[in-house]
Length: 364
Image (cartoon, rainbow, N blue to C red; front, side, top):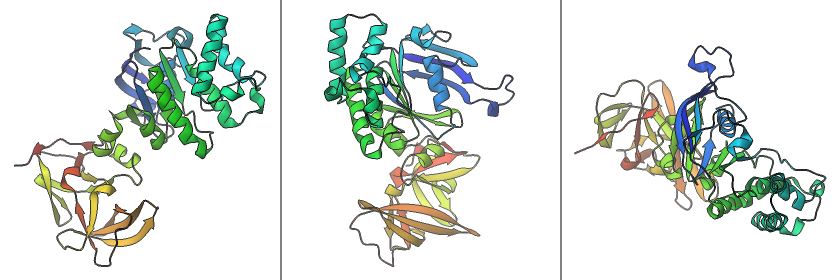
């Protein structure tokens, strides 16, 4: 296991990058703590795989350093870094049995036969493949083959880190929950440093101790699932996490009051000298429908019943346009025709300037 430090790291696939837009990975300084489980979350093309490949040694960064336990490994190979990596598509030897596939990384390190046999059995139990040890991999399903890939990634006890590059993409949706649960249990059991790349927020939030959210080659927030949900550091995080994501509404903020059009909202914090584009962020879970005219006037377009709650799609008329606002209503709560207003939970309101979260002072 190892602490992984990224120092002044950046990467461009261009030979002569001239502007920030030329960088697939913008400058990052970050420490991945020894023994923690991280998810690297973001949409396709945001730089997740580039970053993972730099950590693993498959790609040399354009600038900066990679350190394992404070030792510079920037120019070291994957084998020298002692990294295990599990890829999006199963990497198995079809002509080998499950037992032989799991044993392969250990045999390459010339470990003893008794140790290999015991370790393979342990790992097979961990991934639920103990009954298939003597089966050829060629006859197994895609999810079983991916289990073998996961097993090959964790079979070595001495690895510094295990990296997962969207390992559940090809897995049947019904199997994903089971494999995610197994991965979480394996981390708790093994204690390895694990980094899990995904574009799926559910995978990220259920697996990781901390989530690293990326957008356009930049790390915009590192935090626990609760921190990302309650206090998105950037409006992108608010949009990307949640279903539906955070409502981001144009606002004017003066002191402890926010104005959406002519509607005034009292805030719990005071904000001074805000500049740039000012917006108010509020999760759909923290908005209530009301029949009180003191709320923000809206018109309900439709109600979507998703089983355990309802999603209300509403809009607020603002000057010559309308603002779309999503509200989550608990199942069983009746939505009546006179519910034409919205009330916001004050302690759940976030204020943004040029898309970045602003800290205010407690209002007196």
